Length: 234
Image (tube, rainbow, N blue to C red):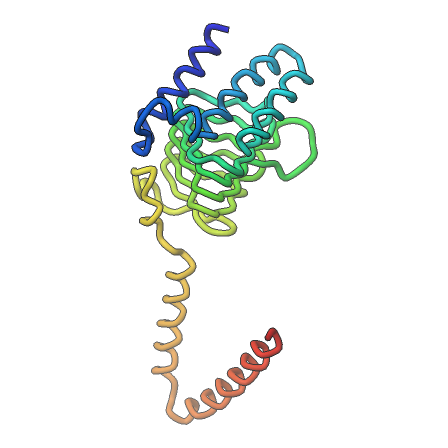
C-alpha cells in the first residue's frame, strides 16, 4: 500500500514537471483528467492484483465516468506515465506500459482478437503515442519510439523509430528526439505522390512525338471518366 501511495504521489509530480500549462497545484484537481484516470487505475489495479474482480471494475467504471478515459484495471502502467488531456483514451486489459511514456488524447491501445492471453500492446520506456493513434494487437512499441497522430499501428515499431500513416510505416531511427515535434514527421503519402508525378513527367518527355498525340487522346478520355465519377457523387 505504501508503494501505491508513492506511485500516486509521483504521478502528480510528473504533471508538474512535464506540462508548462500548469500554473498552480490547484489546477491539478480540475483540469487534468489523465492524472485522475491514473489515480483511479492505480487503486483498481492494486485490488486486481489481489485476485479481486468486482471492486476494481467498479473503481475503473467510476474513473471512466469522471474522466472519459477507459483503462482496464488489469493493464500494467509504469512510473511517470503522463496522459496529456486524455479524453477518449482506451487502454486494454493486457496492455503493458513502461516508464516515462507520453500518451495524448483519443489514443487506443486495443486488441484484435477475443482470445485469452496477451492481446494488447506493450509500450516500452520513453515512447510517445500521438493524439488519435490506434495501436492494436500484441505488438511492441520500442523504447523512445514515436507514433504519429492518427496513425494505425498493427506491427512492431523498433526502438528509436517513428511510425506514421494508415497502416503505419516505420521511418528511420532517431528521426526526432523531441516528444512534441509532430510537425517534423514527414508526410509519407505526399512524398511518394510527388515522386510518381515527377516520374510521369520524365516518361512523357521521353516518348516519341508520334505517340504523344495518342497518349493525349487517352488522357482526355480518362478525364471524362473521372469527371463522370465525381459528378455521380454530387
